[in-house]
Length: 76
Image (tube, helix red, strand yellow):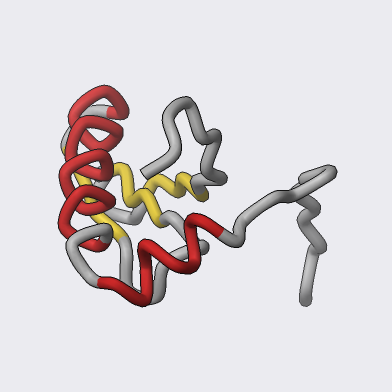
């Protein structure tokens, strides 16, 4: 595995106050925590588990973004 790979994470705070974190590079790679620090620690563990699968190792190997952006839109 390559070292020092920066992966995108999406973080939301749910209605119960928990932080939900997703790594969209890997299907189903998400975690949560009562605090942001705990949620980020947990997503590292989830990523480690995802990387035990060959297809996710290949996905990481092929991941070379030039630019990342996050946008939101208000929907009524």
